[in-house]
Length: 421
RNA sequence: GGAGGGAUGGCCGAGAGGCUGAAGGCGGCGGUCUUGAAAACCGCUAAACCGAAUAGGUUUCGUGGGUUCGAAUCCCACUCCCUCCGCCA
Image 1: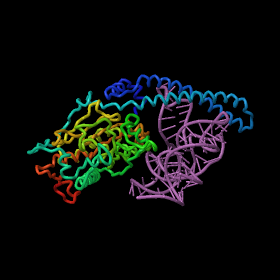
Image 2: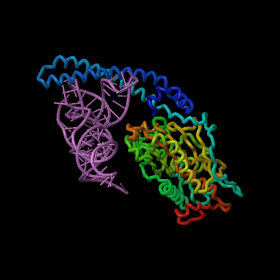
Image 3: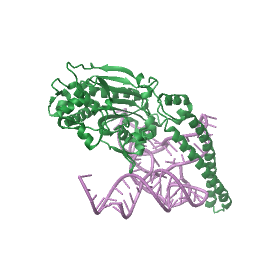
Image 4: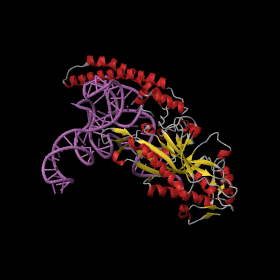
């Protein structure tokens, strides 16, 4: 949610953000209603002030044992007028809010304009691997090794699901533990295990609602949603809280499964583990002082990158252009790993700074040392998503004989297994 | 699912139609004392909004409605929490 004062003073910036992000939101209508809201507010408050004053007088008279019937009669009409004005106010406020919730966060000035094709590569780590033999795709490798089973996944659940067997399943557990251990022990995050089902308020808080309701799984009977990312439950942990400034930053890491409809996407790009309705992810979430959120985004990104470096996977960092930026984000870095079997880069992490956009929706504040409460800045990024990391591990680690080398750092988590055969 | 109890400021907790934005405590800030600190003592300390305002005003005691000239306080509905019973991994 944007600051109403910001919308008033920077309407052009907001219009620009809406255009760049390909959103639909009516700033002019909002501005018009905001005018009216202020007029109604004044009228309503003046009437209330009158009521408060006269009520005080009535109380005083009664205390002295005097009669106040005339004043009470006069206030009866005032009470009706107040009720009418309050109703008008309420309606305008509702409309203002309905318009405001569709306004996306404003991109950081450094964000390139344009769609996906304007995304800018800021760095690359490692050499995209070229194998000395014909590279196989991960689904070929995994099915031959008997660790990946898409046929049976579609039997139990349909297209877009995966079953991992034996060493494949162990690899998932190993990745989760490796990543969480790294972030906890070396990067200073606190581990949290949070619910997979969340309520409407939580989905609204991080900005998935109202825009993405159609993209989510849920239980309509209970008005509960399956989380599309751990960002939702973890960021909402501090909804309606006022944090102590000394307690910032708060750095959390959590593993969850994630669920996404991915409606309408099918084909080559989604084959195998590339795009699933259910997948696993280790997520990093940070709550920061306003002036520290951009340095914190760099730190968050470095923490996510560290996972890929230790796994020995070549990757690149991309700054998303405005048109590719999510609704709530001001600046996002994507981390993409190289998958030689498919000869393409795969997004395994999106590291974003939401500034105070989510915090306003959730009323997450901190008590500032100079006095006064300020909205915290929230950030998050995957550290990292499992399926595509698994793809990269299989496609990069494959040998000509069809076996797959296990990176050194994962071996302690896999009973010393050096190779999946 | 059934029966009870509850929700008040950063936190704990009192208040039961008007004098309550709200006692008291904790925490925080400032001061006295001290070489320094602690202890003790004194003072200050909710948020949001309208407004050019350091003027004035409004709102907020879980949420939404109602009664009333006036509601933290009375009534209704809902949400959440706790206790007990049932069911269950």
